[in-house]
Image (cartoon, rainbow, N blue to C red; front, side):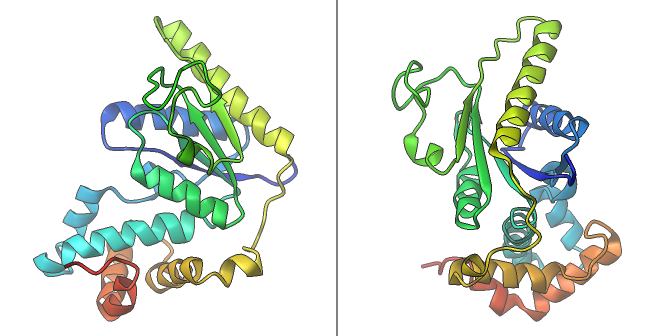
Length: 237
């Protein structure tokens, strides 16, 4: 690989089981020479971000600020700056993953969905999509089904390595070229453009978004541009 591809692993990350599985995926891909924009390491967790912003914002501002900051970081920085979006499509489908895959495809990114789940709520485990809802799957350029019974620690390691191998092979066969910039037709889309502009307002030039100084600057910018940033969210009635 002459130039490293960057992968964004899109997955639920709300409990220890999910976080552990995600970390195995991320570490496995990085060992194979990929860079990753890894949300649970490089992004923000809801509770931690809310606590960090308490020093800078009024209580009634924190909820909206947390939602905006996470949304603009994931959708306006991580996805645009990644070459491959890898979506975990196990049940129950995570709404954030579905949206990220959809926008990634709109941004002309290469999207891969993978599924290890034996549940088939929308069909049969014998069909081409293993019984998952076809709408999210259709946001993927490639779909990987991987059975992981993991009855022993040895099997677990073998099956995880096999999944990483399938992902790696899928990417290699796609012959993806790292893209420095989004295509003009993507940037000109008003929906995409509003996300990119909001991310720039919040994060441009901040070297460490997790430092106290970085969080303070993000909070300050949120206050300065609260109206502009709030346009991305729905009107509440």
